[in-house]
Length: 246
Image (cartoon, rainbow, N blue to C red; front, side, top):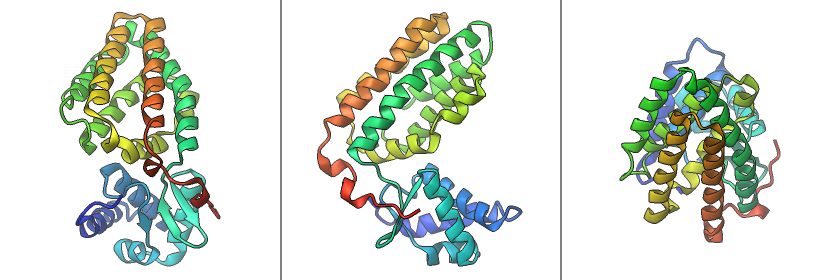
């Protein structure tokens, strides 16, 4: 799942992220750099994280790197394996199904609460802009920029809803990893369906119909789960390789 010619660019991306965060503690610098690399698409699910590369790129010792890797493993972002080292987390079939089953409930509630707030003017214009930005990727939905636009779409809904516990419950980075792992495996037909569903969700929210917004959002996640469940085994991490020592 490596990108051709990505190693040099990836190291530069990580190094730049480290330069921007020198005021933070060394483990925080490493954590931020790895998360930035994942968000930008330079680090992808299944990709190995080499301690020596991180220490060199970020100008830190091995201790902070190891502490950062353990922290990210505890948060479900990377996998630490006794024999294979550290890797950006790739998901097994069961993990994908389990995650989307939970997300169906969480995102449905997110849409419902956001609809109540937007109906009274909270974040309405911001949400409209986020929807327009998302729809701009209708014909290029497999890009990293599209995933960022989709993240902002849901971020606005979370902020509009105003429920801090719901924000903490939403596994944002794991969701991003899931999207990275499967984005290029989604068919053009399924992609078109997804955008039609975004339009229905947005229409329900802007019309103030909280019940329909929740139902449409849950249906969207349920159909995503069904789409991914049809993928071949090669799309998933094998369960026998997921042995974390974190």
